[in-house]
Length: 121
Image 1: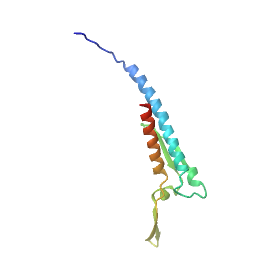
Image 2: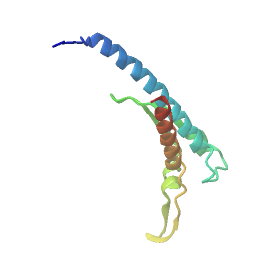
Image 3: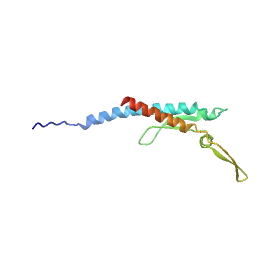
Image 4: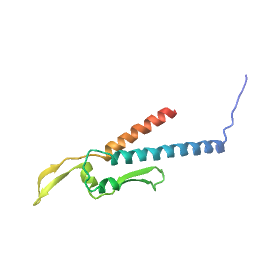
């Protein structure tokens, strides 16, 4: 009977994880860039002042699992993304429909990420 063994050194494993983490981090930043670009170029809404489009930015996450956050800091962003009721004298008199710009941009970023990881695979 022939026996064979392979020693796995945790130091080597840690080095491989570092390489993987760096590659993933670079791709995650690229995905965040795509989400920002797609949201800013969205035709879903008019932005006469340009304030909403200028407010769309990526930020490195401060949480332990890392990544990036894409946000629109304009005070009207959530009203445009999700729509809202029109209220007069305490009564709902109409609705402004949602004009999503971040959600479709996020979906585009996810599609890019899936394709990138499949191509690397």
